[in-house]
Figure (spheres, one colour):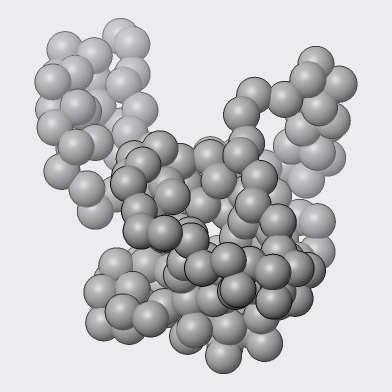
Length: 169
């Protein structure tokens, strides 16, 4: 979902594990940038309102959706899934949503899993994966500590491709 820090990390982790990754974006420039970083394809959710169906058509159904937005996108995420797929929900930016289509959930035999902090062993596995595959966060911009308010403005303005870093002297 998107081109923020969580989405870019998910793309890197999934690609390192050998997965084909399809993404949703709000502008084609971000989609093309994600394709250059290894995504197999993208759907622009501002022009394709049924983006779940569009992702399904593009990919023949995905095995996992990483939801960094919130429950409001569950219906679309479910539409994108292949049978037996999973939605990993870790975003709470939008905790409101309509009723979930129980028929679609049961028909696809899908799982919806809330994701939070993992165990110490999971953290060690993650660190090993990052080191083995030389994964680094994508930085949109670096801002000097003395200009820190500008970093927060950039973060809330949207349109980022990666993380905003505040650099200390």
